[in-house]
Amino acid sequence: MEFFTDYLGFLAKTATVVVAIAIVLILMVALRSKGRRKTGELQVDKLNDFYQQLRHGLEQATLGKAQLKLKHKAEEKAAKHEKKHGSEKPRLFVLDFDGDIKASATDNLRHEITALLSMATPQDEVVLRLESGGGMVHSYGLASSQLARVREAGVPLTVCVDKVAASGGYMMACIGEKIISAPFAILGSIGVVAQLPNIHRLLKKNDIDFEVLTAGEYKRTLTVFGENTEKGREKFQEDLEQTHELFKGFVARYRPQLDIDAIATGEVWLGLAAQEKLLVDELKTSDQYLAEHLASHDLYHLHFATRKSLQERVGLAASVALDRFALTWIGRLTQQRFW
Image 1 (cartoon, one colour):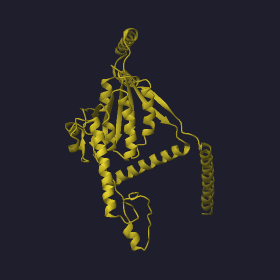
Image 2: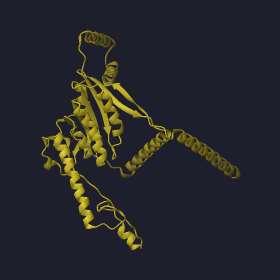
Image 3: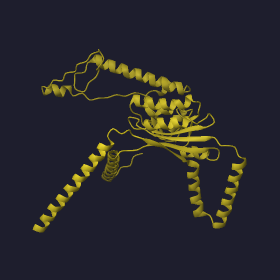
Image 4: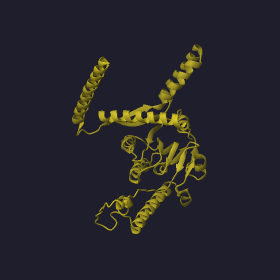
């Protein structure tokens, strides 16, 4: 028993030393990286090569040696002929936008668009694979403005939605000259929402005063801690309505075929119904759309990758691990499936 106690004490001391060293190292890295500007680089992958590798892998598994040899010879002959006699193919630039509530992906999107506009022509095309349920008005306003740069440059823009483009997400999608949706993707939600709790009565019940001092009649309309007034609520609602009108006008500008008053109710529709409402133009997945252009276009996937600090990498890894753990145990406890 005494040996076991001594052993536990040794383990505790060792763990303390290891943790202390780790903290010191993290602090040293943090101090060294403090004040440095975040840098990144544009990564470009040719998707034609990627899809060709997929096909070759399947051929290797299913065809005989003689068939493979004949096929490879035919491909080499066709490639030489195209190189000698064929004209340069138009380019299709593929971008991805996975939107959170703050539209954080805008930071990378702006660099990707700046890069492609430096060489893209009206004969090329930009395809945005978009996934977002919306978020902050100003954040998605900026993201939409970045996409508008493509339209203003005269480069065709196609937006593909495989899962969801709602609210701010649809605000981005509507800028596309074509919107292509998977049959059960979620689209719409052209509306504005704001909500906040108010604990004024709780504070008052416990004899706690909260002072709100403002300069300007409508500097603060609704508050979490103070007493809200009917006048403040009316002004807050007025601001929401004004934002909604701007949202409607923005969508109507890029999708004039819409009956904007009929669809700007905050409702959402699945792809099949969204097409009937003219919210989308075609029903197909982004994979299908890209595959249709493999023979006629050179496909390039652009991704601006920002170099993350040690703290960010550690935090991201911990966040992913916690999310997986939580989802695993929630699934085991509830045994539910969601569609």
